[in-house]
Image 1 (cartoon, helix red, strand yellow):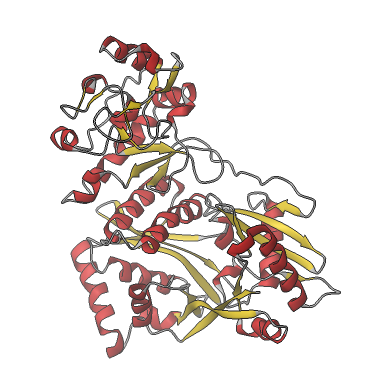
Image 2 (spheres, rainbow, N blue to C red):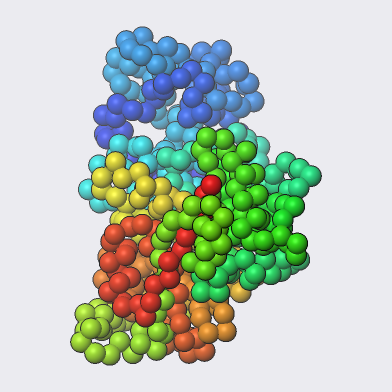
Length: 486
C-alpha cells in the first residue's frame, strides 16, 4: 500500500526537467517543498544508493536535505550537483512525479487541493500555456481512485501546507471542513452551512448593506471562507461581521448598531477593536454607502471611495439594440455561428469541468508581467470563491448557467437574486480561445431572467481593463462603495 500502483502523466518533458536549475535545490534545510517518500519509495531510494539516515521515519517521511557542496543552500541527497541529474529519477517518489502539480491544504480548513507550482520555470516558459493543464483531469482521476485515496489516507503528509505560489486547480474527493477561530467571549464563528447560520447572515446583511450593493447576498461572504475566517463580534454598540486573513482583521460590511447606540458610535467602537488587533497595520470597514458615510465623517472618521459597482438595465442587455451595441451584437452572432453553443443549467456533476475551465481562463488571463503581484493575487484568490459558489449553488440559492460547445463546458456564469428587482452576477468565465462566447452567455442570461429589471455586475477590482469592459456595456449608473478608517 506504500507505493501508488498508477502511472501519472509526465507534465514536464524529461529533457527540460534535466536542464532545470531550480528543482532539487532548497534555500533551507527544513524546506516544506522537500519531497515526501512512502515506505516503499524509501526502500527503493535506499536500494538506489540514498542513505537510510536520509529518512527520519522509515514508514514515510520527507527526505533530509544536505548542504550544497558547491554553493549556498541545500540539495536532495538523491541529486548529483555535478551532472544536475537525479540519481533515482526512474524510481523517484510520487511527490516528485507529480511536479509541477502539487497537493496542498486550503488556506483554511481541512481537505486536499490539486494545484500547480507557478514557480516552475517550465510553466512560465511553455510556449503552449495550457499544455500542462490538459493533464490535470488525468492526475485528479488517478488521485481520486481507490488506490489514490488509500495512499493519501495512509500518508497525509504527502499533502503540503497552503502556499501562495501553488495555484489551486480543483479539490480532490475529500470533504473540505471549515476551520473555526479560537473562541472569545465576544466572538462567535459564522456558520453559513447551517440553516440558522445562513438566515442570521442573510438578516444581518439586509440591515447592514445598502440594498443596491452586491454584498447584500450571503454568498458574497460564504464563498470566501476557504480563504478567510468570518466571525460575529458582539459590541457594546451593536454587532459586526469580521473577516480574518493572514492574521489581519477587517470588517467586510458595516456593523449593525444596537437600539441604544448610533451608527457612527458602533463604527468607531469597531474600528478601535480592529486597531487593537491589527496594531500599526490599522483597521477598516468596507462596503459603506455614501449615505452611511455622512454621519461617520461628521463624527471625525475618514471615508474614501473603495470602488464602484456597475448596474445595468437587463432588458437593454438582452436586446443589444442600437449602434452603441453594434460590436456586442457582432461578437454574440459570431460566437453563435462559429461555436453553436448550447445554453443550459449547471449540474453538480459539472463542478470539476467548470473548475478546469476556470484554470485555463486564469492561465490565459495571468499577467504577463510577473511584477503585477496584485493582478496575480486576485486571480489566485478568486479560485476559492468560484469553487465554493459552484459547490454550494443549490444550497445558497444561486443561479448557474453554462455554455456547452460540442458537449464540453466552454463558459459559465454564477448569479443570485439580490432584491425583488435586481440580480447580481457573481462570476463569469469563458474560454478566451472562443471569442464572443462570454458576451453571448451574458446576453442569454439577461434574456432568461425576465423577472429582474437590474443586473448588478459588481465592481472592477481596480483593474483598468475590467473597468473598460464594464463601461462598454453602458451601465445605467455606477454606485460608489466607500471604506472607513480612524
